[in-house]
Amino acid sequence: MKSVAVITGAASNIGYTIAQRFKSDYQVIGLDKKFEASGSLKNRAEFVQTACDITSEQDLQSALKFARSKGPVAVVVNSAAVTEPRMTIADIPYASWDKLIAVNLSASFSLMKLSAEYLKDSRGCCIHLLSCSEGGVCWLRSNTFRHESPLLRL
Image (tube, rainbow, N blue to C red; front, side, top):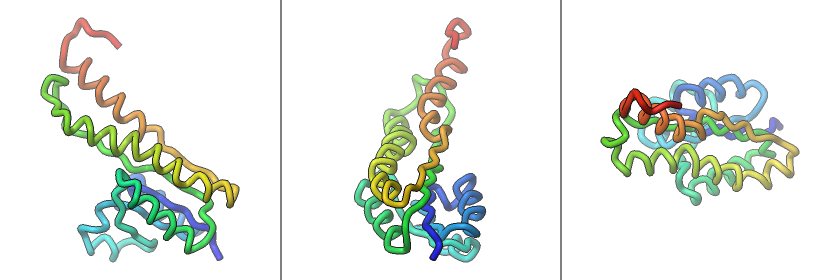
């Protein structure tokens, strides 16, 4: 029986590519909110796709329990991230900022916290793509310094 790899953001981009690469060595459980909305995604992937809102602790707990039921969870890859529209900091709605923090930072924390016991039991590892957590800070920084004033320096 293959060990399990849980990969967030597995419907597209880096997460999808990682899931495709890992499927030869692991039983991959791909997590993504997009799996819920599109049946067409199921046709192109060759890994288990689980609809999961990673900002929901309950969704993450359920997804990790499901993954554990398939075998020992040896790898957790946190690749889910969002970027919001590029605009001046004065024009960024608080709702956009809150979403960015929820997905890129809070969900990363929850995933690591909730998967810790599974990884400890299997002596596994968590791969955390820095661009996910840095996204919030980099997004704020680049929008502030790019749009506000040539006098502001980084």
